[in-house]
Image (tube, rainbow, N blue to C red; front, side):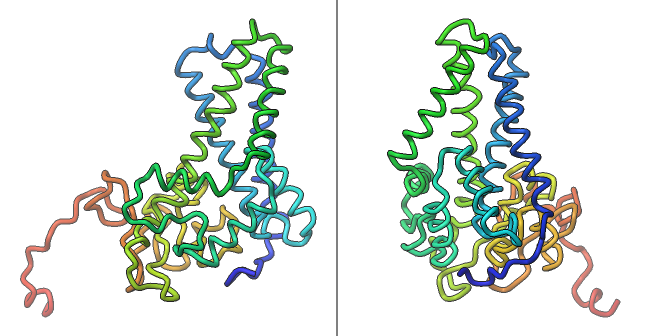
Length: 302
């Protein structure tokens, strides 16, 4: 059992967003596979790929909640079944090994025993990404995934695609590419940016290095970035919270507001990652931070 992983009863609160994600993924899949996507205008095609990528990532996020037992906390068996369904639709991932890997990530955070972590400070983004993916992929899983794509290609061809090459291109653009982009999205916002500073070995929680940091993003940007997976410090503090409850937990911890969020609230908290356009801005401000011109003695007496 994970530390601080006592399930907070959300009852059925997570079912509605989970159902919206799964249904959105299925509806867009069936409807778009019937189209000649190469005949779409480029903006529409790009929108379709990005929309499918967001829904693809949502499948993993729902499966991730299930791995922590918070999708259906009152019904553990259905929690596992729905989680297995979402991970299967995501990339034919087996639920059991994924759950063990993820719990190991929490139990051995930022150590050589962490399957999601690359302890070598010299390892670049690509090496870390390949190690990250290697923990989830296997020959059997890849066989199921490729078989599923082949069946979708057949469905696309029978559904009206002009040729087999057109059907294969459609599957590549609407299934393979969104999955690849989704894996990069999850890795960047849920692993690399929140954990990369921990390779420096600075002192922090449990003597295992600095705590995971959260991305300094407004709530709306955090949602679009990766379903609040970038609020990673909050997730590691309370793994029993569903993804949509992380902003409220962050606010309750005094680390931000509903407009702009700041993770620097404790002595051992690492400096949060923030976009370049937000560098030098105060929370809730769009103006650069200017040094005060009032002398210290005056400020102390005023």
